[in-house]
Amino acid sequence: MSVAAPTPEVPSDWDIAKAEDVCEVQNGFAFKSVHFNDKDEGLPLIRIRDVHKGFSKTYYSGEYAEKFVVSNGDLLVGMDGEFRVRCWGAGRGLLNQRVCRLLPVEGPMTKDFLYYSIGRPLKQIEDFTPFTTVKHISAKQIRAIELPLPPLPEQKKIAHILSTVQRAIEAQERIIQTTTELKKALMHKLFTEGLRNEPQKQTEIGPVPESWEVVSLGNLIEIAHGYAFKSKFFTSDGPTVLTPGNFKLDGGLYWGKRTKFTTEDHPDHIVFSPGDLVVVMTDLTPTAKLLGGPAFIPDGRVILHNQRIGKVALANDRTSPDYLYRVFLSQAFKRYMRQTATGSTVRHTSPSKIKEYQFGLPTEEEQAEAIDTLGRADAKIAVSERKKSQLQALFRTLLHELMTAKTRVHDLDVRPSSPAQTV
Image 1 (cartoon, rainbow, N blue to C red):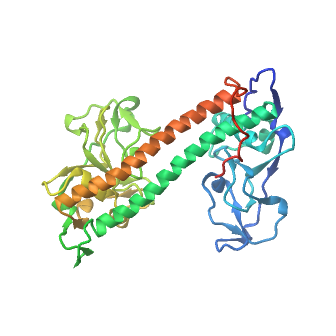
Image 2: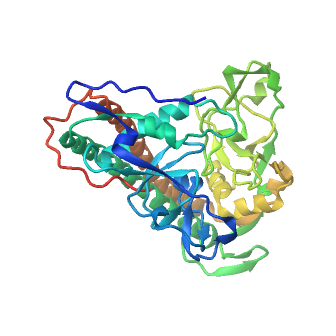
Image 3: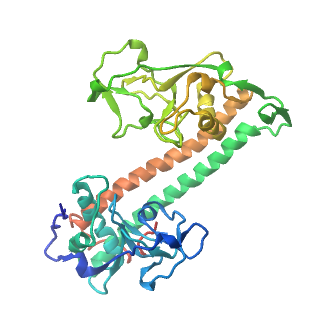
């Protein structure tokens, strides 16, 4: 079934134009796989996943027509899965099948305004396309999309406002990425060299600072399994059943579409308390990136201890939950989890396997210093995450208000927009 975006409502001084009237919709080409390579020979292919995430390092070394060469600034739409317009910014490449390019015609609409205006109807078509295995959109559907068409001066002002907010979002994303990379390097130093430039000694796990002791997690903690909840009691409301799907890759929890709730009767001891430290013991993906991932139980909701989540309890006072949380996030521990996991499609670990992990344990004073140092990096990332979230909400509001003319820009002192943002 073909799905069309609704016709936009516009003020009397605006027009409505079909996408085919303001741009050429160019389909990609089915390049022959016999010429594919991963040795940087030829030009990289731009496929669906490349439009969404960046180049996947597949190159084409055969002959091609110049009309299929994509350059920075070209507007691309992935036609399977997610229908998103992207302003390409990763260098020259070849327009592969199931990716189309929007080539604005001279006159009625600027490229920047096209970039922002076509995104909303594409998302509406995606939302209302019946789901099979993968959603599809056709070039014919894209050509038929009806777009608001303000006068050119107003188009430029609208695009300038939106691109200004988008650049601010990207600035926060760069801060998050840079701080995250610095934090990774800092964690490696903290867990291998320490903070005090001590001479190192050789141990069964390699060199560690002289004042550190090599310990197993089993010397410090106990880990308890949870309860096997029955799926027939899962519902849309009630106490939350904590599952691996609630864990973030970089630590912590979130409550998305996969969050499970239950009406099943359960013993009181499987209700978590705020501040409990928990780890993932089953990962549904072969990469096992979540396995052993930690989180602290937040306040504000009833959260139940599921069987494939480990609840960590201190066996003594030689360390703290905050320091253990950092240990569970370390690259060395994650690598150990992947190497010792069982299963193929679904990967598992166990309390006994987690407790066998060995690492260098600093003094309690140095542990506290490490927690404080990493906490400052986390705080900087959290501030930027909040700013990014606020800017994204502002962008969504402005996009709706400006594209529907609920907010007009006639009296705003804005200069023409810079080129549409690239990905």
